[in-house]
Image (cartoon, rainbow, N blue to C red; front, side, top):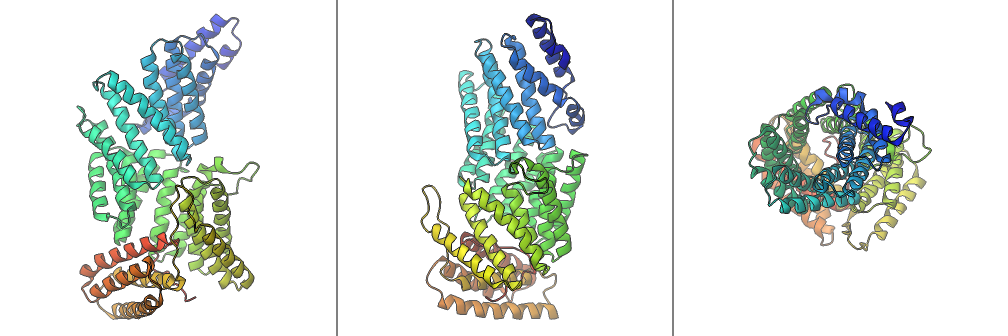
Length: 558
């Protein structure tokens, strides 16, 4: 096929061969995102599809009909590369090739409406792929252009084209997901609710496709309720259960089960969370088959690591996080610096997150040298990311402060006094640089009482251990109650000495809530105690600390 295109005797024969190839690829290309049984066959001809699209662009006098077909093939190749292979760079290239083809066809002045509709679809998919790569600014630009084209087309058709309305709802949904990633939760909720309303008002609102789309949006709305401070976990759980009742697609069900596990962990229902995660992993393995190095499988492994850490199963937690790191290194390989080795870490926030968790596990295992090694790797990634940070700068800043805190703890345990001093100075200098927020960037809150912060974290860990006991009677309950009571007394001393600020108010409110329910039966106290722990955690994170919900975390006095 490739030789036929390259060695044709004339331009006319070349055009004929290209059209033959386009038709051949369209007849052989069976990829449907919602049907995993089409994925393996599509992968076998993916490179042929990409080659045909590239050659189509070379022939400017190709008919608009065939340019449109080539553009649609290139778009679908991009969707496949991103969805099935996690090959985001290749996906972006295919989608950008599709846009070039569609623009060249539209320039001919015929079938312009069809080209514009196809362009909106391609821009939508490109926006999604750019989000996967954390290129949030370019993602938003692509999605807003797609929305503008679709809205214009919808107005021209007086809102009577269901496929266009579906495209608008899809792009509103994707804009909402993007805003969630940027942590603009109110804006995200507006986009997602608009998308959900459009889908539910559709004439095809009872179709399986619409149910699946509604389920996806409900899932994202639930994620917002989890991310809010304080979180609305019961509301999130209700939305996720509704989502689960609507979606039949394997990937969607797995994603929803994973989110339900996250909510269950936050609520203290660890066995239920374990079941959700096992089921989600089974579905993903069924979906992706031989491609086990997939970003969604990594996400489940990360959650399983967090759950094992909370259960004090440190070796299991290390194994889960290590597997997550292995997959993310593969998926985000494109983010490695030029000339780096294959075993080096890509410069990506998702990689730094799992390195941090490995560092925390290693510290809990008293493997301080190993912990420092992975935390230094996290430090290097965060430093490089912050150099080019835009919308993520606040999150990166807080992550760097937390990283330095853990590095200092490791250095102290290893007796490296000079390194301790160096890390303290680096962290202090960083806090001073952030004292004046730049335009458009929220200032990171800092407490004037570091001792109060650490005591609050220690009491919070004791409270969670107390709340998550399996029995509310017996010797162990008495011991944990006494530990918590002593901790609350020590917390009061720190509160009394601390200056008036948000940290002091939050710690006082936490102490008051715990004391009010400490003598209640287990079932009555659990929800109140865990809710108070969540609220305190949010304040601590706002002050630049990364709080681990491992019930075995024992904070040492400084």
